[in-house]
Image (cartoon, rainbow, N blue to C red):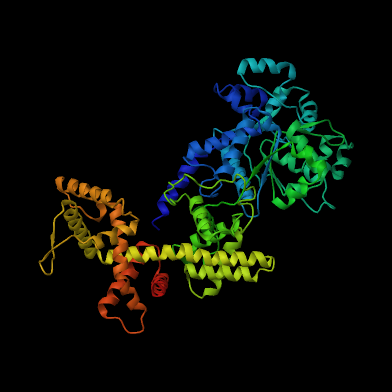
Length: 638
């Protein structure tokens, strides 16, 4: 249980950070003990929902050193930045705060997770001292106690405390104030509240029903006939059911799932709430509600909605943020790893070789590119650039494709759920707790062929992407692993090659002969050997002289410092030596794959390579053997 104490320490740190002291008193005591406690208190207590959410996002970064979404959402930096910009602008008081935030994207793209994280962040923030939130005790909409201030006194409050009190008492609290306290607002009870979706306090969720059966009461409540008999009047706030989703979300956030499936009158109510910050229900005056609405929908629903001209005014009152699939295969692989890690032990404990998730991710990215049926070399280049890799001299982070001119890029294609389902199927049917990359690619092939929802033309294209992923990416990755593992096994040979290269280069630059180590005969430097090494890293014939001079300068510098010029001293030359040695020693792997029994020396070398793949490269014994066998087959085909 090596992780027991660190986890326990983390729990203690969490409780220290979220140790919230309950508070309850009258409005008079609230002003004396809470409002006047610190100079910053009035501004914090007067925050609206958008300001509160923006402060929560800032608090999350400052308190943990990471973003609220770190480790949960991958490849959505642009969308997350736009969501943050929305709340920042709304918190500053701009008109953006009077627009509904609509997240638009393909299925399983992270929209729901983004909103869930916002809601969990609010719950956690309200437990902290920075996020202390107060409400009129017993209020069905948990409204701010500052609503108790008479309008005639609010200018003085602003001048005294530098904060603005906005909003009106809800009908329920207005009636209580008169009935229980004779209008003396200083005696109204106030308490600290903690946001909680489970307790319907400051965090709400609404999922539309069948439009034929959907009821507006789900949002704004209705008359509770069982209470009418008690209070005697349907217009009494006590006879109203305050169970609507907008009341539950007051002071926080309301998540609207698949909002465009809701009735039009629902949309009008929500957009009016966003813009005017109130709702109108029968028998009551306007009810002030402070809530940030975050809605999400898929592309198909959105496109249908846009085509109807009467929806233009509604669209004008929304801030739309696209939440596309990621096009970085490394981020996509992190999504799979997260989903697998949270799955049942049968899936979580299965070993995947180090390229399995990356290969599946490359396939997914290929399906999301709008011109995914283009030239293979251009497709491979795009995938690598989207991942920030160096391609043809383009430095990492520069020259990456943008979405300009390709509005549907990353908004269609394979979802992470499709890939993880294929992985789960492969794990269940493999009969072992180890999957190699080829197992994963075959699982994707089976998933595509057996899915009746995929049209034939798209099936053919996606199956070609599976083959392309293996040829252009996996083959290179697995050969590189075996190459490096094999290189270490021939470490002394590699150093001897380096020494030979230096001897030959120095003789070439000094225009002198070298002594052959076997015959002791004098000969010219071996230009063929030098070029065979240099060409492995694409040193041109025109650039060979400057490359050789640079190597000699570094070697002389090491000599003057009393250091050995080793393979670690010059990274490009090390790479060239590695590749050259791999070419020279590929016969070892060919021997393993041959029908005749390899000798013990060869078998020992290969066993060492296999073990190094396990110890240093993330393979297990099964996937290491599979990788060696696969590379052997590739070499036999060359």
